[in-house]
Each structure stands twice: as C-alpha cells, then as structure tokens.
Length: 273
Image 1 (tube, rainbow, N blue to C red):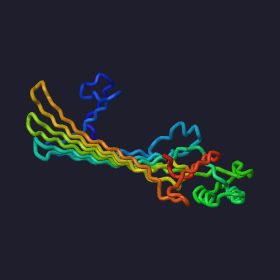
Image 2: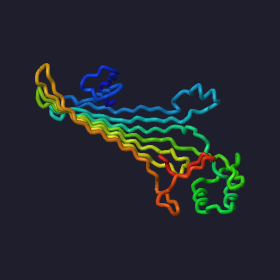
Image 3: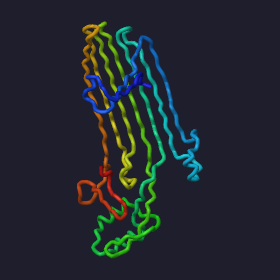
Image 4: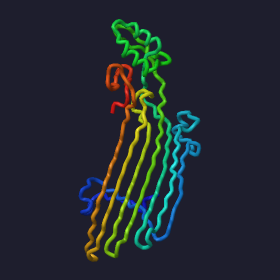
C-alpha cells in the first residue's frame, strides 16, 4: 500500500543500473500531494474462512491446518509547504501464525534407558546429568542402541515447534521542489521481524530471533536543460540478523557446546548456526 509503481528490467539496463546483475527491480514509493489523504486497511486470512484444500481431504483431515495472517496498516500524506514540500508515511503490522511443519523424529533414551546409562562403568555423571536435564526421557521405547555393550531403550520425543512471527513495516517519504530546476527526494524504509528460531532440536533451546532492515535514500535532481539532467543519489542500507543462543551453562565450560548424537538424530545445544 506504500508502492505507487513497480517494474522489472530483465536486460538492456540503462547506465544508471550498470552495477546490477540479473533482473533489476524498481519500486517507487508513494509521494505526498497538495491534498491531505490517508487510509486505514486490513487484509485478513484465517483458517476458518478458507475452504478445505482437496489435499487435506484426501488425507482424511477434518480441520484446516493453522494459517492466520493479519496485515493492519495506516497511511497519511499531504503538503508541508504547498507546491513545495510534501510528505507521506505508512506503517503496517503483520502477525503470522502457521501450523508446524513436521520434521524428522528426535530420539532420546526412555526412563529405563537413562537408568541403564547411569549404571555403565566409567560413565561421566556430569555429562549424563546435562543430557538428562535438557533431553527429557521419551515416553515409550521404539528401539534401542548399544552403548558400552549395553542396549539402551530409546524412543521418539514428541516435539511441537511454534511457528509464529511478528512483522512491522514503516515507510516515510519526503519531496522538496526547491525550484523549477532543482528537487530533493528522501526515502526511509524500516522492516522489523521478530520470529522464533526453531533450528535447535530441543524446544528448551528455541529462542526469539530479531531481524532488522534499514534503508535510507536521498536523491538530488538538477535540470541543466531539456536534454540534460543530473541526478545525485546517496543511500544507506543495513541488515541485522541475530541468532541468540540463550543463557545456558555447562559445568566446567565457558559456553554451552553443541553435542551431536548421530544415532538419535539429536543435537543438544542452541542453534548450531
């Protein structure tokens, strides 16, 4: 709702796009005018409003998987100095909640399995305690693995990972007509996304993952003649993505390690990225 024009250049770019490879995407942000104008809007998708997909019917599902999305926004634009200086602003909030996509099974020892591990001669009790603290026992056995000549019952640990994100989008534009030959154009775009990092195998290591994007653009135009125009463009672009690992401690170590158990398809620790 903050875009007035969008175009795609596939080839034969002009000189001002000489730095780009592949397709060139051009987005023109809405500008203010001599009249104040505004808008409030909402786009809403909800599992209860959508028809059942035939694929789900074929799988004998009776309810839609969760998909709830709202796009709530508002905008305002108008003159600061009539015929000279204009502004436009748009803000949008976009929460999305979805059903969890199934992943490969995570296995952990059962309660009996942990008891057998504790009785193996030479077992490191500290490491076993850490494993048992974070990788809770499977409710029932579905197989076994040998450890030190002892068969350890293991089973599937039921995990339901959350799938939710909050998005915030802000757009601000300003246009200043200095004279018939000189114009200034300014744009500021802000994207904020807070989601849940579920790359770790165990829910206790899931963490909030913040992503931030900032884009500032300033352009100055001067008309020397009907056939000669100069544009000076300055831009600043910053993207910040973090992968918090939480405040977990491991006895004897400064940082919590990532412990890989290939036989169990299990990683004990935060997101290894």
